[in-house]
Length: 357
Image (cartoon, rainbow, N blue to C red; front, side, top):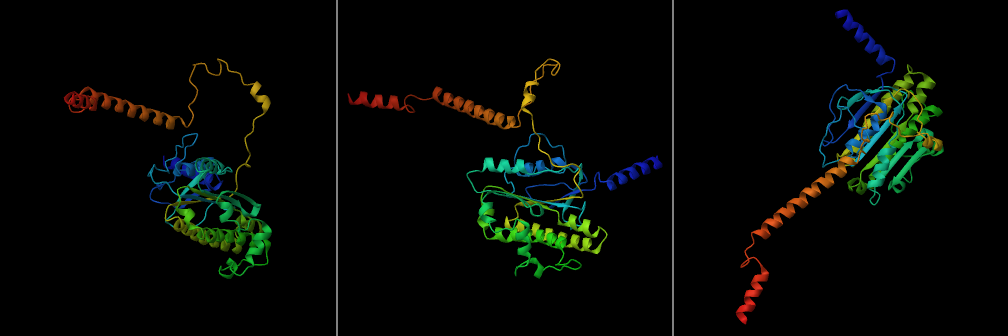
């Protein structure tokens, strides 16, 4: 039995080393209303957006059987969700106060569903939605993000010019073995500059952090991956860059958490490499002619699956009908037990008229 248990442990260790559970999903900061349980439960990579949707108070299409996220306070949802994806490393040495979970099957994901939910539910208010990948020059802004981050550097040329300005991180950040003359190092440092600029620009509009609409930030950093490819993962440059990134991410998480008054969730995903490219699901027009309902597809005549809004509509109709029924019962009881001489204005007016006559 001991040898068998040792063999299982060796298999699990080899699986982790092979990348099955090497990537990591970490919670850097979270308010008391959002409860993350401390445990080693792996989370599927494609369900990470559902975690953000749930703690923001939105519905998801499929249930998430993951015990890492508890119910929390339903009446106090966080005002912001911040997700930072770091490519090129499967784990970062974060402080002990954070909670980390292994990622199972790290596939590419996006927070488009959460952004669409915020845009649809709070379109009349001022939500801030920012999705940015500096190295790929990919940016998506919704709501007040267009005005708040108007001066944010989003192209490679802008990022390079921003680094050589007077108030850049080059004047305050210890570079150690990194160089200002190497393009790969400058790309990594420019991503750190973007994190600092986001905090600086957002601090000028603190009123947006106090409104009722939730905000969303999704940032993808791949500068560390490029340093690993250029220098090697065993090089001193990669080690220094990893430590600089950890310190910058922790400072960024603390500043974003404080800007929202301690009511923001800051997450981080560290992934060595995604398993498959991100593709969007499409459907051919000719496919609709091939879908034919038959008894073989549904031999037991089962009902169609309910929509994810079914529970919401059901509760609204149920409690509305219960309230109307109670109102009818109370009104009927009081009418039945009414005293015509004292309670009814009709009889009271009639008696006065009779006495006057």
